[in-house]
Length: 286
Image (tube, rainbow, N blue to C red; front, side):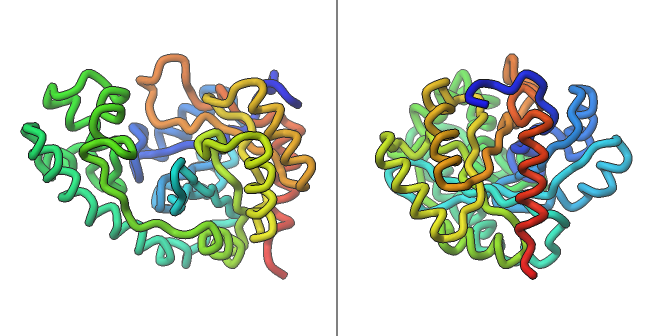
């Protein structure tokens, strides 16, 4: 399965208003069912709040909803995230994420200070009005900049101000790979490497890096993803097979406003999802 699956049944990378998505968990469930999906995973940034009602919403919409999370990892020079999938909602896990959630709160005023120093009329309340109860992230700040007329779109917000190395970028506290993988495994979950293209590694470096993560307990690798090219998908599939990792996939859905991207556009077909479930339910500690 080196290309895009023909009949996608499961989208395993979706965000809600609990982090930086535009849709509530209820709204996501409705969209997923409308798209003809059998299953989704709610994987908000550094929180499981959006996945708390997974079982209830799944039953209501005739959909399997897997509770998940996307954890920010300390990594330089690229971007590294680890997805955690759980066979049942892990009540204790949110407490382990408190450090990352605090880091998001602490970072906000520092970014706002830098933006104001650059001459932009923007405040913390402007961002909080957009984020509401969700985990505050740079996409919320980008939306505030757009609303104020300082940038045209997300791309400009990140390429000029908010991206790594840009004038308003502020680093935040993150987990290490070992910490995140160990925490997910200890809670009966399955750790998966998210969108590996963001690591910025060549073929040999990627093989070695993922091999090292596998030794730490990594169980899967996201292969089917909107920004992965055909050669990348082929490479990631080969690496996953060589290391006995389950291949996963999803849209990384945040907003219906992104043209052409909706739940189910990327993900796993029926056979791929069956392999994922086999690994997920087999990953629980004895």
